[in-house]
Length: 589
Image 1 (cartoon, one colour):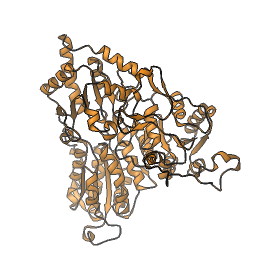
Image 2: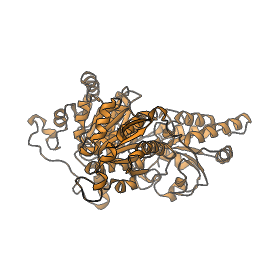
Image 3: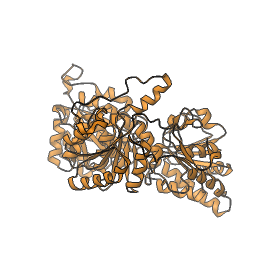
Image 4: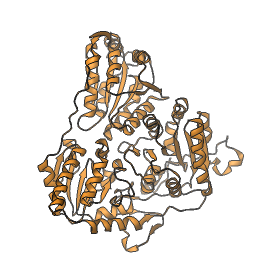
Protein backbone atom coordinates (compact mmCIF):
# COMPACT_ATOMS: atom_id res chain seq x y z
CA UNK A 1 0.00 0.00 0.00
CA UNK A 2 1.18 3.52 -0.74
CA UNK A 3 -0.12 6.93 0.23
CA UNK A 4 -1.14 9.15 -2.66
CA UNK A 5 -3.81 11.61 -3.68
CA UNK A 6 -7.08 10.00 -4.67
CA UNK A 7 -6.79 11.48 -8.16
CA UNK A 8 -3.32 9.95 -8.58
CA UNK A 9 -4.85 6.57 -7.78
CA UNK A 10 -7.53 7.25 -10.40
CA UNK A 11 -4.88 7.87 -13.06
CA UNK A 12 -3.13 4.62 -12.15
CA UNK A 13 -6.42 2.76 -12.53
CA UNK A 14 -6.93 4.36 -15.94
CA UNK A 15 -3.52 3.10 -17.00
CA UNK A 16 -4.20 -0.42 -15.67
CA UNK A 17 -7.51 -0.49 -17.55
CA UNK A 18 -5.70 0.19 -20.82
CA UNK A 19 -6.29 3.92 -21.27
CA UNK A 20 -3.55 5.67 -23.21
CA UNK A 21 -5.42 8.64 -24.72
CA UNK A 22 -7.80 11.23 -23.28
CA UNK A 23 -9.61 14.20 -24.79
CA UNK A 24 -10.68 17.21 -22.82
CA UNK A 25 -10.55 20.81 -21.67
CA UNK A 26 -8.90 21.71 -18.33
CA UNK A 27 -10.64 23.89 -15.78
CA UNK A 28 -10.28 24.91 -12.17
CA UNK A 29 -12.27 22.04 -10.67
CA UNK A 30 -10.51 19.36 -12.72
CA UNK A 31 -6.95 20.72 -12.58
CA UNK A 32 -5.91 18.13 -9.95
CA UNK A 33 -6.58 15.41 -12.54
CA UNK A 34 -4.51 17.30 -15.09
CA UNK A 35 -1.69 17.59 -12.58
CA UNK A 36 -1.83 13.83 -12.02
CA UNK A 37 -1.86 13.17 -15.78
CA UNK A 38 1.17 15.42 -16.21
CA UNK A 39 3.07 13.69 -13.42
CA UNK A 40 2.21 10.22 -14.70
CA UNK A 41 3.08 10.96 -18.33
CA UNK A 42 1.61 7.73 -19.67
CA UNK A 43 -1.67 9.06 -21.08
CA UNK A 44 -1.69 11.28 -24.15
CA UNK A 45 -4.02 14.25 -23.82
CA UNK A 46 -5.62 15.95 -26.82
CA UNK A 47 -6.95 19.43 -26.10
CA UNK A 48 -10.36 20.00 -27.68
CA UNK A 49 -11.80 23.39 -28.61
CA UNK A 50 -15.24 22.50 -27.20
CA UNK A 51 -16.11 19.96 -24.52
CA UNK A 52 -18.89 18.46 -26.63
CA UNK A 53 -16.20 17.97 -29.24
CA UNK A 54 -14.04 16.17 -26.67
CA UNK A 55 -16.90 13.78 -25.90
CA UNK A 56 -17.37 12.98 -29.59
CA UNK A 57 -13.62 12.43 -29.94
CA UNK A 58 -13.74 9.92 -27.10
CA UNK A 59 -16.80 8.30 -28.70
CA UNK A 60 -15.09 7.97 -32.08
CA UNK A 61 -12.00 6.58 -30.36
CA UNK A 62 -14.02 3.84 -28.63
CA UNK A 63 -15.87 2.91 -31.83
CA UNK A 64 -12.63 2.51 -33.76
CA UNK A 65 -10.36 0.99 -31.09
CA UNK A 66 -11.60 -2.53 -30.46
CA UNK A 67 -11.29 -3.26 -26.74
CA UNK A 68 -10.07 0.19 -25.67
CA UNK A 69 -12.19 2.95 -24.20
CA UNK A 70 -12.16 6.66 -24.99
CA UNK A 71 -11.99 9.14 -22.11
CA UNK A 72 -13.09 12.78 -22.06
CA UNK A 73 -12.42 15.26 -19.28
CA UNK A 74 -13.87 18.62 -18.20
CA UNK A 75 -15.32 20.57 -15.31
CA UNK A 76 -18.77 19.60 -14.08
CA UNK A 77 -20.62 22.84 -14.78
CA UNK A 78 -20.80 23.97 -18.40
CA UNK A 79 -18.27 21.36 -19.48
CA UNK A 80 -20.33 18.57 -17.94
CA UNK A 81 -23.53 19.77 -19.56
CA UNK A 82 -21.68 20.09 -22.88
CA UNK A 83 -20.85 16.39 -22.61
CA UNK A 84 -24.49 15.31 -22.41
CA UNK A 85 -24.97 15.11 -26.18
CA UNK A 86 -21.83 12.99 -26.40
CA UNK A 87 -23.05 10.68 -23.65
CA UNK A 88 -26.43 10.32 -25.35
CA UNK A 89 -24.79 9.50 -28.69
CA UNK A 90 -22.63 6.82 -27.05
CA UNK A 91 -25.46 5.32 -24.99
CA UNK A 92 -27.82 5.14 -27.96
CA UNK A 93 -25.31 3.11 -29.98
CA UNK A 94 -23.99 0.92 -27.09
CA UNK A 95 -20.55 2.55 -27.02
CA UNK A 96 -18.37 2.45 -23.88
CA UNK A 97 -16.99 5.90 -23.04
CA UNK A 98 -15.80 7.43 -19.79
CA UNK A 99 -16.52 11.08 -18.97
CA UNK A 100 -14.73 12.57 -15.94
CA UNK A 101 -15.87 15.90 -14.51
CA UNK A 102 -14.44 18.09 -11.77
CA UNK A 103 -16.88 19.37 -9.17
CA UNK A 104 -17.08 22.03 -6.48
CA UNK A 105 -15.92 20.93 -3.00
CA UNK A 106 -18.36 18.76 -1.09
CA UNK A 107 -19.19 21.52 1.38
CA UNK A 108 -20.34 23.73 -1.49
CA UNK A 109 -22.60 21.20 -3.24
CA UNK A 110 -26.25 22.27 -3.62
CA UNK A 111 -25.36 25.85 -2.63
CA UNK A 112 -25.29 27.32 -6.15
CA UNK A 113 -21.52 27.53 -6.16
CA UNK A 114 -19.81 28.88 -9.29
CA UNK A 115 -20.09 26.35 -12.13
CA UNK A 116 -21.43 23.70 -9.75
CA UNK A 117 -24.27 21.65 -11.18
CA UNK A 118 -25.79 18.29 -10.27
CA UNK A 119 -24.24 16.61 -13.30
CA UNK A 120 -24.81 13.18 -11.75
CA UNK A 121 -28.58 13.65 -11.98
CA UNK A 122 -28.44 15.36 -15.38
CA UNK A 123 -26.34 12.57 -16.90
CA UNK A 124 -28.18 9.61 -15.39
CA UNK A 125 -30.78 9.19 -18.19
CA UNK A 126 -28.09 9.09 -20.90
CA UNK A 127 -25.49 6.89 -19.23
CA UNK A 128 -25.16 3.34 -18.03
CA UNK A 129 -23.96 4.76 -14.70
CA UNK A 130 -23.45 8.30 -13.40
CA UNK A 131 -21.94 8.91 -9.97
CA UNK A 132 -20.58 11.76 -7.87
CA UNK A 133 -17.85 10.35 -5.61
CA UNK A 134 -18.14 11.83 -2.13
CA UNK A 135 -15.56 9.69 -0.27
CA UNK A 136 -11.88 9.87 -1.34
CA UNK A 137 -11.16 6.22 -0.50
CA UNK A 138 -13.85 5.17 -3.00
CA UNK A 139 -12.17 6.85 -5.97
CA UNK A 140 -10.04 3.94 -7.27
CA UNK A 141 -12.84 1.42 -6.75
CA UNK A 142 -15.40 3.65 -8.49
CA UNK A 143 -13.08 3.86 -11.49
CA UNK A 144 -12.68 0.08 -11.39
CA UNK A 145 -16.45 -0.34 -11.28
CA UNK A 146 -16.84 2.14 -14.14
CA UNK A 147 -14.76 0.02 -16.50
CA UNK A 148 -16.52 -3.13 -15.36
CA UNK A 149 -19.90 -1.48 -16.01
CA UNK A 150 -18.91 -0.20 -19.44
CA UNK A 151 -17.69 -3.62 -20.55
CA UNK A 152 -20.27 -5.93 -18.97
CA UNK A 153 -23.43 -6.83 -20.89
CA UNK A 154 -24.58 -4.15 -23.32
CA UNK A 155 -21.73 -1.59 -23.48
CA UNK A 156 -22.42 2.01 -22.61
CA UNK A 157 -20.96 5.25 -21.24
CA UNK A 158 -20.23 6.19 -17.62
CA UNK A 159 -19.80 9.61 -16.01
CA UNK A 160 -17.72 10.07 -12.84
CA UNK A 161 -18.03 13.42 -11.06
CA UNK A 162 -15.21 14.30 -8.64
CA UNK A 163 -15.44 17.15 -6.10
CA UNK A 164 -12.10 18.94 -6.02
CA UNK A 165 -11.46 18.17 -2.35
CA UNK A 166 -12.10 14.48 -3.02
CA UNK A 167 -9.50 14.58 -5.78
CA UNK A 168 -6.93 16.21 -3.51
CA UNK A 169 -7.45 14.03 -0.42
CA UNK A 170 -4.78 11.46 0.49
CA UNK A 171 -5.68 7.78 0.49
CA UNK A 172 -3.87 4.45 0.57
CA UNK A 173 -3.87 2.45 -2.65
CA UNK A 174 -1.91 -0.59 -3.81
CA UNK A 175 -1.73 -0.40 -7.59
CA UNK A 176 0.81 -3.27 -7.75
CA UNK A 177 -1.98 -5.76 -7.08
CA UNK A 178 -4.72 -3.97 -9.04
CA UNK A 179 -6.56 -6.06 -11.63
CA UNK A 180 -9.57 -5.18 -13.78
CA UNK A 181 -12.77 -6.91 -12.71
CA UNK A 182 -13.85 -9.93 -14.77
CA UNK A 183 -16.38 -9.00 -17.44
CA UNK A 184 -19.64 -10.92 -17.65
CA UNK A 185 -21.34 -11.51 -20.98
CA UNK A 186 -24.36 -13.81 -21.30
CA UNK A 187 -23.86 -16.73 -23.66
CA UNK A 188 -26.30 -18.79 -25.72
CA UNK A 189 -26.67 -22.45 -24.73
CA UNK A 190 -26.45 -25.43 -27.05
CA UNK A 191 -30.20 -26.07 -26.70
CA UNK A 192 -31.03 -22.49 -27.63
CA UNK A 193 -28.77 -22.69 -30.68
CA UNK A 194 -30.31 -25.98 -31.74
CA UNK A 195 -33.81 -24.48 -31.63
CA UNK A 196 -32.75 -21.36 -33.56
CA UNK A 197 -30.98 -23.38 -36.25
CA UNK A 198 -33.93 -25.77 -36.51
CA UNK A 199 -36.21 -22.79 -37.15
CA UNK A 200 -33.77 -21.44 -39.73
CA UNK A 201 -33.47 -24.84 -41.38
CA UNK A 202 -37.24 -25.07 -41.70
CA UNK A 203 -37.49 -21.76 -43.54
CA UNK A 204 -37.51 -21.46 -47.33
CA UNK A 205 -35.83 -18.06 -47.72
CA UNK A 206 -33.88 -17.11 -44.56
CA UNK A 207 -31.66 -14.07 -44.01
CA UNK A 208 -29.34 -13.00 -41.20
CA UNK A 209 -29.74 -9.45 -39.84
CA UNK A 210 -26.24 -8.50 -38.62
CA UNK A 211 -26.25 -5.68 -36.06
CA UNK A 212 -23.63 -3.58 -34.34
CA UNK A 213 -23.44 -6.09 -31.50
CA UNK A 214 -21.40 -8.30 -33.83
CA UNK A 215 -18.78 -5.57 -34.10
CA UNK A 216 -18.87 -4.93 -30.34
CA UNK A 217 -18.14 -8.64 -29.86
CA UNK A 218 -15.36 -8.62 -32.51
CA UNK A 219 -17.26 -11.46 -34.14
CA UNK A 220 -17.35 -10.40 -37.80
CA UNK A 221 -15.16 -13.35 -38.82
CA UNK A 222 -17.56 -15.73 -37.06
CA UNK A 223 -20.56 -14.12 -38.77
CA UNK A 224 -18.99 -14.70 -42.18
CA UNK A 225 -18.01 -18.25 -41.23
CA UNK A 226 -21.58 -19.04 -40.12
CA UNK A 227 -23.13 -17.43 -43.20
CA UNK A 228 -20.82 -19.39 -45.51
CA UNK A 229 -21.40 -22.65 -43.64
CA UNK A 230 -25.18 -22.29 -43.81
CA UNK A 231 -25.25 -20.48 -47.17
CA UNK A 232 -27.51 -17.75 -45.75
CA UNK A 233 -27.58 -14.20 -47.21
CA UNK A 234 -26.62 -11.46 -44.73
CA UNK A 235 -28.32 -8.09 -44.34
CA UNK A 236 -26.19 -5.80 -42.16
CA UNK A 237 -27.82 -2.97 -40.27
CA UNK A 238 -26.33 0.50 -40.55
CA UNK A 239 -24.43 -0.12 -37.29
CA UNK A 240 -23.29 -3.55 -38.46
CA UNK A 241 -22.13 -2.44 -41.92
CA UNK A 242 -18.70 -3.92 -42.64
CA UNK A 243 -19.28 -7.08 -40.62
CA UNK A 244 -19.40 -8.84 -44.00
CA UNK A 245 -17.58 -7.29 -46.99
CA UNK A 246 -19.83 -5.51 -49.47
CA UNK A 247 -18.51 -7.65 -52.32
CA UNK A 248 -19.04 -10.96 -50.51
CA UNK A 249 -21.50 -13.14 -52.48
CA UNK A 250 -23.72 -13.50 -49.39
CA UNK A 251 -23.86 -9.76 -48.60
CA UNK A 252 -27.49 -9.11 -49.56
CA UNK A 253 -27.65 -5.33 -48.99
CA UNK A 254 -28.94 -3.03 -46.27
CA UNK A 255 -32.62 -2.59 -45.48
CA UNK A 256 -34.44 0.54 -44.43
CA UNK A 257 -36.34 3.71 -45.19
CA UNK A 258 -33.24 5.80 -45.92
CA UNK A 259 -29.84 4.15 -45.46
CA UNK A 260 -30.63 1.16 -47.62
CA UNK A 261 -30.01 -0.50 -50.97
CA UNK A 262 -32.80 -1.22 -53.44
CA UNK A 263 -31.65 -4.82 -53.59
CA UNK A 264 -31.44 -5.00 -49.78
CA UNK A 265 -35.08 -4.06 -49.37
CA UNK A 266 -36.09 -6.39 -52.21
CA UNK A 267 -34.15 -9.32 -50.74
CA UNK A 268 -35.65 -8.83 -47.30
CA UNK A 269 -39.17 -8.49 -48.66
CA UNK A 270 -38.68 -11.83 -50.44
CA UNK A 271 -37.48 -13.54 -47.24
CA UNK A 272 -39.66 -15.60 -44.91
CA UNK A 273 -37.29 -15.85 -41.93
CA UNK A 274 -34.87 -13.46 -40.21
CA UNK A 275 -32.21 -14.31 -37.65
CA UNK A 276 -31.29 -11.01 -35.96
CA UNK A 277 -27.94 -11.00 -34.17
CA UNK A 278 -26.87 -8.01 -32.06
CA UNK A 279 -29.42 -5.63 -33.59
CA UNK A 280 -32.14 -3.34 -32.19
CA UNK A 281 -34.82 -3.42 -34.94
CA UNK A 282 -34.31 0.36 -35.23
CA UNK A 283 -37.18 2.22 -36.85
CA UNK A 284 -35.13 3.59 -39.77
CA UNK A 285 -34.30 -0.05 -40.57
CA UNK A 286 -37.80 -1.51 -40.12
CA UNK A 287 -40.30 1.17 -41.05
CA UNK A 288 -43.67 0.07 -39.70
CA UNK A 289 -43.56 -3.19 -37.77
CA UNK A 290 -46.62 -4.46 -39.62
CA UNK A 291 -44.91 -4.25 -43.02
CA UNK A 292 -41.56 -5.46 -41.69
CA UNK A 293 -42.84 -8.57 -39.92
CA UNK A 294 -45.66 -9.61 -42.26
CA UNK A 295 -45.20 -13.21 -43.44
CA UNK A 296 -41.89 -13.71 -41.63
CA UNK A 297 -40.61 -15.65 -38.63
CA UNK A 298 -38.03 -14.00 -36.37
CA UNK A 299 -35.30 -15.15 -34.02
CA UNK A 300 -33.61 -12.36 -32.07
CA UNK A 301 -30.25 -12.59 -30.32
CA UNK A 302 -29.11 -9.68 -28.15
CA UNK A 303 -26.81 -9.21 -25.17
CA UNK A 304 -29.38 -7.05 -23.36
CA UNK A 305 -32.42 -8.99 -22.05
CA UNK A 306 -34.77 -6.02 -22.32
CA UNK A 307 -34.03 -5.67 -26.04
CA UNK A 308 -35.80 -8.98 -26.72
CA UNK A 309 -39.39 -7.95 -27.40
CA UNK A 310 -38.83 -4.22 -26.98
CA UNK A 311 -39.85 -3.32 -30.55
CA UNK A 312 -41.81 -6.47 -31.39
CA UNK A 313 -42.03 -9.95 -29.95
CA UNK A 314 -39.85 -12.40 -31.88
CA UNK A 315 -40.87 -16.00 -32.37
CA UNK A 316 -37.80 -16.99 -30.34
CA UNK A 317 -35.38 -14.84 -28.34
CA UNK A 318 -31.89 -15.58 -27.03
CA UNK A 319 -30.04 -13.37 -24.55
CA UNK A 320 -26.41 -13.70 -25.56
CA UNK A 321 -23.25 -11.95 -26.61
CA UNK A 322 -23.20 -12.06 -30.42
CA UNK A 323 -19.87 -13.86 -30.55
CA UNK A 324 -20.93 -16.53 -28.08
CA UNK A 325 -24.17 -17.11 -30.01
CA UNK A 326 -22.31 -17.41 -33.31
CA UNK A 327 -19.95 -19.96 -31.78
CA UNK A 328 -22.95 -22.12 -30.90
CA UNK A 329 -24.65 -21.56 -34.27
CA UNK A 330 -21.50 -22.62 -36.10
CA UNK A 331 -21.18 -25.76 -34.00
CA UNK A 332 -24.81 -26.79 -34.49
CA UNK A 333 -24.82 -25.99 -38.22
CA UNK A 334 -21.56 -27.92 -38.71
CA UNK A 335 -23.07 -30.99 -37.04
CA UNK A 336 -26.18 -30.77 -39.24
CA UNK A 337 -24.06 -30.41 -42.36
CA UNK A 338 -21.98 -33.44 -41.42
CA UNK A 339 -25.20 -35.38 -40.98
CA UNK A 340 -26.49 -34.19 -44.35
CA UNK A 341 -29.41 -32.36 -42.72
CA UNK A 342 -28.43 -28.75 -43.43
CA UNK A 343 -30.51 -27.43 -46.33
CA UNK A 344 -28.90 -26.22 -49.54
CA UNK A 345 -29.52 -22.47 -49.91
CA UNK A 346 -27.64 -21.91 -53.18
CA UNK A 347 -30.76 -21.13 -55.23
CA UNK A 348 -32.05 -18.58 -52.71
CA UNK A 349 -28.58 -17.00 -52.31
CA UNK A 350 -28.25 -16.77 -56.10
CA UNK A 351 -31.60 -14.97 -56.36
CA UNK A 352 -30.43 -12.44 -53.76
CA UNK A 353 -27.16 -12.06 -55.62
CA UNK A 354 -29.01 -11.41 -58.88
CA UNK A 355 -31.04 -8.60 -57.33
CA UNK A 356 -27.79 -7.17 -55.96
CA UNK A 357 -26.29 -7.17 -59.45
CA UNK A 358 -29.17 -5.44 -61.23
CA UNK A 359 -31.12 -3.32 -58.74
CA UNK A 360 -28.69 -0.43 -58.68
CA UNK A 361 -29.13 3.32 -58.38
CA UNK A 362 -27.61 5.61 -60.97
CA UNK A 363 -24.46 7.49 -59.95
CA UNK A 364 -22.82 8.68 -63.16
CA UNK A 365 -24.08 12.23 -63.60
CA UNK A 366 -21.89 14.73 -65.47
CA UNK A 367 -23.62 18.03 -64.85
CA UNK A 368 -22.38 21.14 -63.03
CA UNK A 369 -23.18 21.96 -60.25
CA UNK A 370 -22.46 18.41 -59.16
CA UNK A 371 -25.00 15.79 -58.27
CA UNK A 372 -24.06 14.09 -54.97
CA UNK A 373 -24.39 10.59 -56.42
CA UNK A 374 -21.36 11.25 -58.62
CA UNK A 375 -19.27 12.26 -55.59
CA UNK A 376 -19.83 8.87 -53.96
CA UNK A 377 -19.06 7.05 -57.20
CA UNK A 378 -15.73 8.88 -57.37
CA UNK A 379 -15.00 8.11 -53.71
CA UNK A 380 -15.48 4.40 -54.42
CA UNK A 381 -13.11 4.65 -57.36
CA UNK A 382 -10.45 6.88 -55.78
CA UNK A 383 -10.21 5.72 -52.17
CA UNK A 384 -8.50 2.54 -50.92
CA UNK A 385 -10.49 -0.58 -50.16
CA UNK A 386 -9.66 -0.34 -46.44
CA UNK A 387 -10.93 3.26 -46.08
CA UNK A 388 -12.67 3.97 -42.79
CA UNK A 389 -15.66 6.31 -43.19
CA UNK A 390 -16.92 8.53 -40.35
CA UNK A 391 -20.29 10.30 -40.49
CA UNK A 392 -23.42 11.15 -38.52
CA UNK A 393 -26.69 12.32 -40.13
CA UNK A 394 -28.20 14.15 -43.10
CA UNK A 395 -28.55 13.54 -46.82
CA UNK A 396 -24.74 13.20 -46.92
CA UNK A 397 -24.86 10.20 -44.58
CA UNK A 398 -27.94 8.67 -46.22
CA UNK A 399 -26.42 8.91 -49.69
CA UNK A 400 -23.13 7.60 -48.29
CA UNK A 401 -24.87 4.49 -46.99
CA UNK A 402 -26.64 4.01 -50.33
CA UNK A 403 -23.60 4.45 -52.58
CA UNK A 404 -20.33 3.84 -50.70
CA UNK A 405 -18.74 0.43 -50.22
CA UNK A 406 -17.44 -0.91 -46.90
CA UNK A 407 -15.31 -4.03 -46.70
CA UNK A 408 -14.08 -4.36 -43.11
CA UNK A 409 -15.55 -4.20 -39.59
CA UNK A 410 -15.22 -0.81 -37.88
CA UNK A 411 -14.69 0.89 -41.24
CA UNK A 412 -18.13 2.51 -41.10
CA UNK A 413 -18.10 4.65 -37.95
CA UNK A 414 -21.56 6.14 -37.78
CA UNK A 415 -23.50 7.83 -35.00
CA UNK A 416 -26.66 5.91 -35.75
CA UNK A 417 -29.48 6.54 -33.31
CA UNK A 418 -28.73 10.00 -31.86
CA UNK A 419 -27.25 11.51 -35.03
CA UNK A 420 -26.18 14.89 -33.61
CA UNK A 421 -24.97 17.42 -36.15
CA UNK A 422 -21.32 18.30 -35.55
CA UNK A 423 -20.40 14.77 -34.44
CA UNK A 424 -18.48 13.84 -37.58
CA UNK A 425 -15.46 16.12 -37.33
CA UNK A 426 -14.43 15.47 -33.70
CA UNK A 427 -15.31 11.78 -34.01
CA UNK A 428 -12.97 11.51 -37.00
CA UNK A 429 -10.18 13.00 -34.87
CA UNK A 430 -10.90 10.36 -32.22
CA UNK A 431 -10.79 7.62 -34.85
CA UNK A 432 -7.48 8.98 -36.10
CA UNK A 433 -6.04 8.98 -32.57
CA UNK A 434 -7.13 5.35 -32.14
CA UNK A 435 -5.99 4.17 -35.59
CA UNK A 436 -2.85 6.01 -36.70
CA UNK A 437 -2.36 3.78 -39.75
CA UNK A 438 -5.89 3.81 -41.22
CA UNK A 439 -7.11 5.81 -44.20
CA UNK A 440 -9.85 7.89 -42.56
CA UNK A 441 -12.45 9.82 -44.55
CA UNK A 442 -15.10 11.90 -42.81
CA UNK A 443 -18.30 12.71 -44.68
CA UNK A 444 -20.37 15.81 -43.90
CA UNK A 445 -22.95 18.07 -45.36
CA UNK A 446 -22.16 21.76 -45.01
CA UNK A 447 -24.31 22.18 -41.88
CA UNK A 448 -22.82 19.22 -40.01
CA UNK A 449 -19.36 20.53 -40.94
CA UNK A 450 -20.10 24.03 -39.62
CA UNK A 451 -21.41 22.81 -36.25
CA UNK A 452 -17.99 22.03 -34.78
CA UNK A 453 -15.66 23.31 -37.46
CA UNK A 454 -13.35 24.78 -34.80
CA UNK A 455 -12.15 21.26 -33.97
CA UNK A 456 -10.15 21.30 -37.21
CA UNK A 457 -7.59 23.27 -35.20
CA UNK A 458 -7.22 20.23 -32.92
CA UNK A 459 -6.24 18.12 -35.92
CA UNK A 460 -3.71 20.75 -36.98
CA UNK A 461 -2.22 21.20 -33.50
CA UNK A 462 -1.98 17.51 -32.64
CA UNK A 463 -1.07 16.28 -36.14
CA UNK A 464 -4.16 14.14 -36.72
CA UNK A 465 -4.44 13.97 -40.52
CA UNK A 466 -7.59 12.70 -42.19
CA UNK A 467 -9.64 13.58 -45.27
CA UNK A 468 -12.92 15.44 -44.74
CA UNK A 469 -15.34 15.30 -47.67
CA UNK A 470 -17.87 18.15 -47.49
CA UNK A 471 -20.81 17.95 -49.90
CA UNK A 472 -22.04 21.53 -50.02
CA UNK A 473 -25.51 22.38 -51.25
CA UNK A 474 -25.89 25.24 -48.75
CA UNK A 475 -29.02 23.65 -47.34
CA UNK A 476 -30.26 21.67 -44.37
CA UNK A 477 -30.86 19.07 -47.04
CA UNK A 478 -32.59 16.32 -45.07
CA UNK A 479 -34.93 18.77 -43.35
CA UNK A 480 -35.67 20.50 -46.66
CA UNK A 481 -36.59 17.14 -48.14
CA UNK A 482 -38.78 16.32 -45.12
CA UNK A 483 -40.53 19.70 -45.45
CA UNK A 484 -41.89 18.59 -48.82
CA UNK A 485 -44.55 16.82 -46.78
CA UNK A 486 -45.63 20.24 -45.46
CA UNK A 487 -45.42 21.92 -48.89
CA UNK A 488 -42.77 24.32 -47.68
CA UNK A 489 -39.10 25.22 -47.85
CA UNK A 490 -38.76 27.31 -44.70
CA UNK A 491 -35.66 28.37 -42.76
CA UNK A 492 -33.51 25.57 -44.16
CA UNK A 493 -31.37 27.50 -46.65
CA UNK A 494 -27.83 28.40 -45.61
CA UNK A 495 -27.13 30.45 -48.74
CA UNK A 496 -26.15 34.12 -48.74
CA UNK A 497 -23.92 36.35 -50.85
CA UNK A 498 -20.60 36.28 -49.02
CA UNK A 499 -19.13 39.78 -49.32
CA UNK A 500 -15.63 38.33 -48.90
CA UNK A 501 -15.95 35.82 -51.73
CA UNK A 502 -13.34 35.82 -54.47
CA UNK A 503 -14.80 37.76 -57.44
CA UNK A 504 -13.49 34.99 -59.66
CA UNK A 505 -15.66 32.49 -57.79
CA UNK A 506 -19.07 33.89 -58.74
CA UNK A 507 -20.49 30.40 -59.10
CA UNK A 508 -20.03 29.68 -55.37
CA UNK A 509 -20.39 33.17 -53.88
CA UNK A 510 -24.07 32.61 -53.15
CA UNK A 511 -23.31 29.43 -51.19
CA UNK A 512 -22.43 31.49 -48.13
CA UNK A 513 -19.66 30.22 -45.85
CA UNK A 514 -16.25 29.87 -47.49
CA UNK A 515 -15.26 26.50 -46.03
CA UNK A 516 -11.89 26.55 -47.77
CA UNK A 517 -10.92 29.84 -46.16
CA UNK A 518 -12.14 28.77 -42.72
CA UNK A 519 -10.32 25.43 -42.89
CA UNK A 520 -7.10 27.11 -43.93
CA UNK A 521 -7.52 29.71 -41.20
CA UNK A 522 -7.70 26.85 -38.68
CA UNK A 523 -4.35 25.47 -39.84
CA UNK A 524 -5.56 22.82 -42.29
CA UNK A 525 -5.52 22.39 -46.05
CA UNK A 526 -8.59 22.59 -48.29
CA UNK A 527 -9.57 21.97 -51.92
CA UNK A 528 -12.74 23.02 -53.72
CA UNK A 529 -14.18 20.84 -56.50
CA UNK A 530 -16.81 22.16 -58.93
CA UNK A 531 -16.77 19.82 -61.94
CA UNK A 532 -16.49 16.07 -62.51
CA UNK A 533 -13.16 16.33 -64.30
CA UNK A 534 -11.53 17.59 -61.09
CA UNK A 535 -12.34 14.54 -58.93
CA UNK A 536 -9.34 12.29 -59.45
CA UNK A 537 -6.80 15.10 -59.15
CA UNK A 538 -8.47 16.44 -55.99
CA UNK A 539 -8.25 13.11 -54.17
CA UNK A 540 -4.63 12.65 -55.25
CA UNK A 541 -3.72 16.19 -54.08
CA UNK A 542 -5.52 15.64 -50.78
CA UNK A 543 -3.54 12.51 -49.97
CA UNK A 544 -0.30 14.27 -50.90
CA UNK A 545 -1.15 17.23 -48.64
CA UNK A 546 -1.98 14.95 -45.70
CA UNK A 547 1.30 13.13 -46.12
CA UNK A 548 3.31 16.35 -46.36
CA UNK A 549 1.70 18.43 -43.61
CA UNK A 550 0.10 15.81 -41.30
CA UNK A 551 -3.07 17.88 -40.86
CA UNK A 552 -6.72 17.36 -41.85
CA UNK A 553 -7.47 18.10 -45.50
CA UNK A 554 -10.93 19.24 -46.56
CA UNK A 555 -12.35 18.57 -50.03
CA UNK A 556 -15.48 20.63 -50.62
CA UNK A 557 -17.75 19.52 -53.47
CA UNK A 558 -20.11 22.21 -54.77
CA UNK A 559 -23.44 20.46 -55.35
CA UNK A 560 -26.64 21.52 -57.05
CA UNK A 561 -28.83 23.17 -54.44
CA UNK A 562 -31.64 20.57 -54.48
CA UNK A 563 -31.26 16.82 -54.91
CA UNK A 564 -33.80 14.45 -53.40
CA UNK A 565 -32.15 11.27 -52.11
CA UNK A 566 -34.11 8.00 -52.19
CA UNK A 567 -36.23 7.36 -49.09
CA UNK A 568 -39.76 6.50 -48.10
CA UNK A 569 -42.19 5.75 -45.30
CA UNK A 570 -42.10 1.96 -45.75
CA UNK A 571 -39.45 -0.47 -46.95
CA UNK A 572 -41.77 -1.47 -49.79
CA UNK A 573 -42.51 2.13 -50.77
CA UNK A 574 -39.18 3.93 -51.17
CA UNK A 575 -39.34 6.91 -53.53
CA UNK A 576 -36.26 6.78 -55.77
CA UNK A 577 -36.70 10.34 -57.19
CA UNK A 578 -33.81 10.00 -59.67
CA UNK A 579 -33.48 7.73 -62.69
CA UNK A 580 -32.32 4.32 -61.58
CA UNK A 581 -30.12 1.80 -63.34
CA UNK A 582 -31.99 -1.51 -63.33
CA UNK A 583 -31.15 -4.07 -65.99
CA UNK A 584 -34.33 -6.04 -65.32
CA UNK A 585 -37.50 -3.90 -65.03
CA UNK A 586 -39.40 -6.90 -63.64
CA UNK A 587 -37.35 -6.56 -60.45
CA UNK A 588 -38.43 -3.00 -59.75
CA UNK A 589 -40.21 -2.59 -56.43
